[in-house]
Amino acid sequence: MYFRVIVLFSVVIFLGACNHSSDKSTDATQQRDNVYAKNHVKKMIQYSHDLAFIEPDNIGRIIQTTTFNKEGEEIKIVRYDNNGNICFTEEINPDLEKGKNKAKEIKGRDDSITVTNLNPEGKPIEMISHTYNDLKQIISTMRRDKDGVLVEKMTFEYYPNGLIKKDVYWNVELDKPEQIINYKYEYFN
Image (cartoon, rainbow, N blue to C red; front, side, top):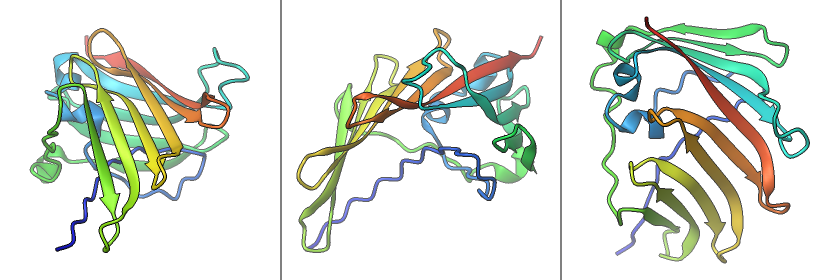
């Protein structure tokens, strides 16, 4: 009997290309109780800072805004090119999207989970490890090849209210941040 474990973990990295289709997959920030509604978030603004180890304090260029209704549901996504011009806009009707994006339950220890992807012969292809904080938020993701060599590392920071603050993509050879996605928020009054 062959086992194949498939992990659906999507992190969108925007490198200026605007031919991305809308990705409605559930991410780490949406798996918790609706943190956007709880915090009265009106808009989330994402900034990308490439080669962050050169200028670590630079917030970066705007890459996407996501607008929410008062129930914390996405109603509009706008993406920007390298020059800050709008290159993609999507209006979303939350009533039509209900039921499509159910959060997946994560099982494992309280603080981490490791998934090993196997080929059809049952031999390891790669291992992906997620580490969580006390609030069950992902604080790191590491991907190792079949020999256990680290090939990808991401870390995540959160504001005290539970909203995502920063995604950090590491250069594993230099062990330094390579790209940082910063998050800022606008709130309903």
